[in-house]
Length: 106
Length: 118
Image 1 (cartoon, each protein chain N blue to C red):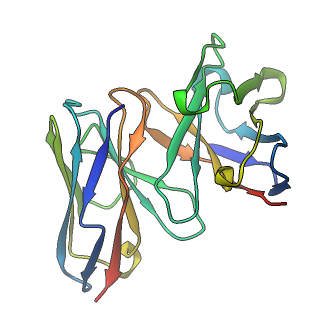
Image 2 (cartoon, chains in turn yellow, green):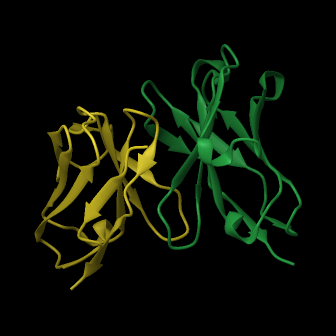
């Protein structure tokens, strides 16, 4: 099984900040990686797939990069609606998720 | 508009089974696989398995082999998950999710809370 590890587990930031979340895979997954946003009591929402392709309707302040075993999700210019948990998911060998990063208001 | 609507919350005793449904609308049901993912309180999502409605191919995570059954009723546009021999560790929100092409999930059901309690 492919293990996914995110860092940090918790991130404190302010509106307008630029933040980066890292996701590492236990083996190479090429660019078969997705990112999701989840708010309490709701299902995850797809943000990015194939490591860097923005899902339709997702604001352009979200961006993804990486390949192989290391990936990043960047949010440029945090908005109040962005404070949530974020998960990476590999689908090279379906499927496994990172443990999540909780983005909190500083 | 793609919609996945799941059945209501369930409370089950240890050792029992639970069946969760996921009704799809807004797209051609058999063209897109449905996956099941669960999330225990405060934990990461955990992939459980999937079904391809077009060819009825099914794959289960090894973590659930022997306990999990995924089925599909094309006439009702509905997928089902049945999990048997429940333990307290099966307490979680169970989600169905649609796959558009590769297995990342572009649409999700609202989730079904399954609580295992004596």
